[in-house]
Structure formats: C-alpha cells, structure tokens
Image 1 (tube, helix red, strand yellow):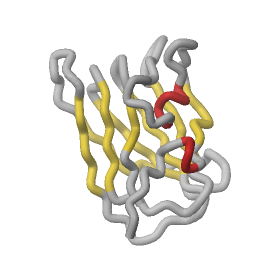
Image 2 (cartoon, rainbow, N blue to C red; image 1 turned 180 degrees about the vertical axis):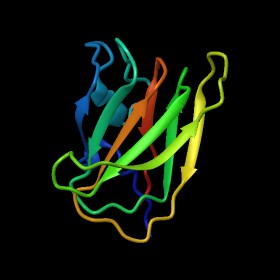
Image 3 (cartoon, rainbow, N blue to C red; image 1 turned 45 degrees about the vertical axis):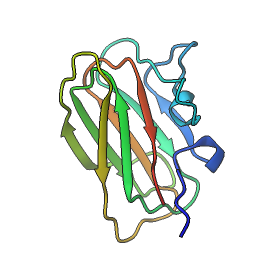
Image 4 (spheres, helix red, strand yellow; image 1 turned 180 degrees about the horizontal axis):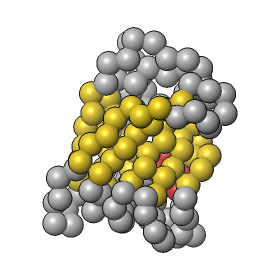
Length: 136
C-alpha cells in the first residue's frame, strides 16, 4: 500500500486557524511541503494551529520538526466543525540549544471519523514548525 503524506495542501489539507501569523512565514507554510519554508509564531503563548483533513485519515506516524518548543499538545476532533476537541497527545520535548527538534510519534488508531481535525498547542516560543509525514 502506498504511503502518502496527508498533511500537505496538495493532498487537500488546510490550515483553518492559527493564533499568529507573520507575512514572511505564514501558517500555510506548515503544510506546503517545502523544507525551506516554515511558520513563525508571534505574540504571547500558547500558540495554536488547526489542520483540517477533508477525508478519512488513519494516522500511523506524525513527525514534528521545531525549534524552542517546550511542550507539544495535540488534540483531535471528529466533528465536522472545529469544536469539541479532545486531548490526544501531550509531550515535553527535549531542549536542543537552538538545534532542530525532530519528534516522531508512532500512532495506532483503529478507526477515525470523517473530517478529523488535529490542533496543536505550543506552550513555548517557536521559530519553526513543520508538521509533515502524516502517513496513511
């Protein structure tokens, strides 16, 4: 079975909410598939973004690449609207002194409903976040 990165705009994913935006590094960069682009947060914390999948997704692996993230919290919703989120994963990341943080989360989900949404709340400053390799 072919593995597909579902967290790409080319696969139909959308960033439907972000709590901050910089015109040079907008939240849409999270899902553009370009390793040279990124989302930069601004303002106070926590920071949050919501990625919307327009079809059923079975997430097997999630890779988060970031800088200066202390705690990563991922929530999910099975609603057709971005409401009623439930905590899915919360993890403290290792401080890497300005080096890229690569966090791989292997996930086993038996079933998911259509229109799943993943939101991520980041509780420390971020200079770069790439949410990629959501494999189906």
